[in-house]
Length: 171
Image 1 (cartoon, rainbow, N blue to C red):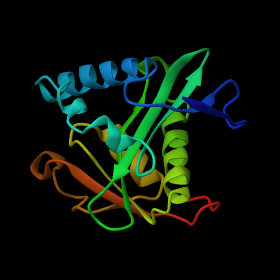
Image 2 (image 1 turned 30 degrees about the vertical axis):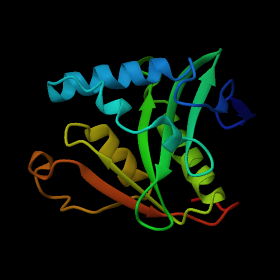
Image 3 (image 1 turned 30 degrees about the horizontal axis):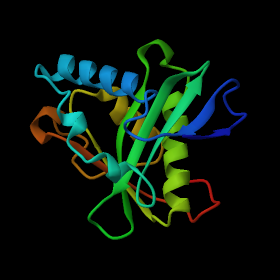
């Protein structure tokens, strides 16, 4: 685990972690519980669908925002099958820390890290019962790859994309 201090949110540190790191467990547990409640079926296995190595360097990363030794937000990316594309996954903010801009910070950190690794495009999906995520991606410059006027339930996973700046540029 490595960390990088950032002044944008005082008291928060950006930590690069592995899927098996104890700091990651609360994120996966709460995500699984929330997805299960929203979609009416156990979603915990879905969170373990990808091998942990896909979220590790050199092609992936898992980043956490840590405060007082606990993860308060996080997300990950892995290499997508489309050339030059990072697939963002598991973007999460702990339920006790929402509405503070932490998800925006996670997205920006993932974009920065992916661009530094040479990715030129970010791709992600969110579920039709996650309107907060849909609004986050629209507000942070992601292009919907679906009919935004359609009933989200009729679409299924809602795909988005965004072109990333080169290493050092803010996206």
